Image: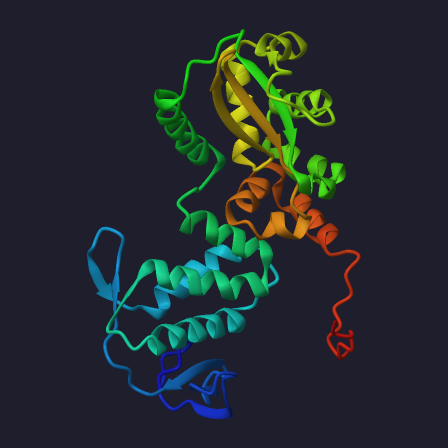
Length: 311
């Protein structure tokens, strides 16, 4: 084999061992002329595998192309090339175990994200942001704006006199204010945060449809016009803190705003879209701190056996 450093033939194998999945042999070689060491992999010949892209076109499965994408995801992260190569090998193995001659880019992307999630959270988020086609917050906002227009075309026209009632989901006891501040608030505008607190303040024991208030109350309290109030409401709905129901009765139209509990930090970070947005908004350093905070009270019982009694 030709040395990649001096281009002379005659390298010798100094170490040989199987990869973790036993699907290939990793050989460490040394050039006798320049002393340069490099690694090669020996694999059995595979049947051709085509990748179906989103536009319907097809191309041959390319390990190097997949590896290059992973390299971009782990830039400035503590993940070595050997670990990335092993990820590619495991992904390829999973794909071939499907027993198909063609595989979609979506299936490959899911396999890659499953692997990266176990290796490095930030690398996983980077890859997911590209895979989900939200390269940055601006792209995500454009998608939200487009969705907003569709919603507005089918939603009733909100008026200051339109009534509302605040309801609280029975699971709201799980609500954690620190989680709201640290994980949710960076994704929300001040108006959305203010609306959440205003609705929380308006909640009462045993609410009834007849005991409604006009939206003018919220507009005055928050100093917001109707368009800004509706935008703030959509933000709360987008992050899962609010569900909205509409009802028409003899008194007119009334909206029921049901407050939802926060997710746990671990659940929040496990959400692909919310994690992408949080990383974009707070930066890698703060995101790393928040990731550590999510698990700071958890001890992994790696060598323990569960002896919890069954009932």
